[in-house]
Image (cartoon, rainbow, N blue to C red; front, side, top):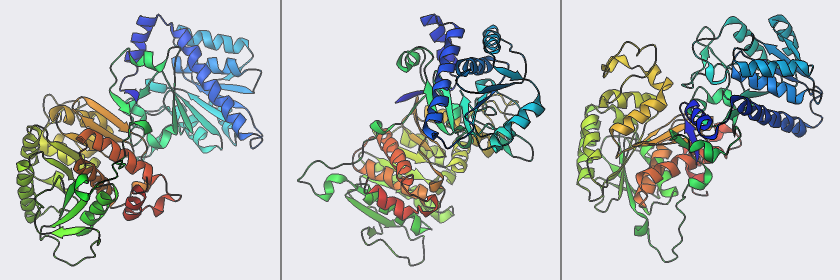
Length: 518
């Protein structure tokens, strides 16, 4: 797994102290990584592009210094031009600019010239404007340049992090609620992966993310500071492949899916659980749906939880009425009476008014396996009702000291700082596993956090979350730990969705069917 940091300057500073790496050398290595990306692109497109030239946008900090160093390295081999927003503010960046100019690189600080150059530009644009130094809002010059860069038919490379994305992964606002940042085809991030690259807003701007070392291996770099999270990769996933030839259905667990007011959600979840290896799946009819529906004939149905239930799924299609929550209370009581409680909590259950008591109780049961799977709005409800959140740095939270009142943390705050809030929840309830769903999903358990960046807009469809909940329940039923079940389910769910040629054709049942063939 690759290490991810909230503030990558921490291991960078430590690396400088431990390995005595001067800033100038790190800048050269950053420019070398960018050069490799530029040359690789031109080699791959062959003769498709007549304009094999490079336009570099340089800021006043060390990110700009990387751009000047890149220009010098490409000078003579490719036509290179630089737009500079101002004179370098650091000694290292100033030195790099001087060397680029001495090599004959053309530098302009005229916005009009830059906009004229970018019009119909078809080469490579490299963004070295802000990097991780961005905060607040874009000035008029930055807005004009970024808009022009995004609108032309060029290949775009961001240095470290697309300009306009702040350390929380939020994009700048360009007026009328529209978000603006450099829209990269690839982001070459320096030294370490950053959590800001793996947020819902950043996903539309980062493109492919590539980590470049700055002169020492990523393993050495990561050893300089404790990572805040880890990026999930293929080799970390343990699919429920059956190896024992002599087996029966009881060997693979019995998942019970509680049917609520919307029975279809439970059927989708149950179908997914069966596709992902559960030996038996029972739909528990709680008497809430009140209408007839087509049941998957592969699923069993009962009016009570089977005696040998090994994992329970509660919340998918549950409903938010008093009757629904009365059913939820009874189910939780039975779960807590299980010898080794295993439960997935999803969807409407996060609106249960007594959820704080339930979480405290489940968190205190030794050996309990509990997975919660909220999307951002449900996460907001979960955090609000469980009263565990402390405000992080945002406009709506600056004035708050201590624990906020329910109304003081908004859905917008939770969306912007979803990673931080998910971590807070996990620390408060260390024995529960939180899957914070989004364009990139976070899996948090105690102090350990994992990021799955494989999410796709194909999953933006009703029922996709029910499939994920069913996968988690299936793996718990088969004896997975809560952490391993969550990691495997989230990654497999995202990978399966990416297999569809057309994103809009990915329906929940097709998704469940494909998962059975992974």
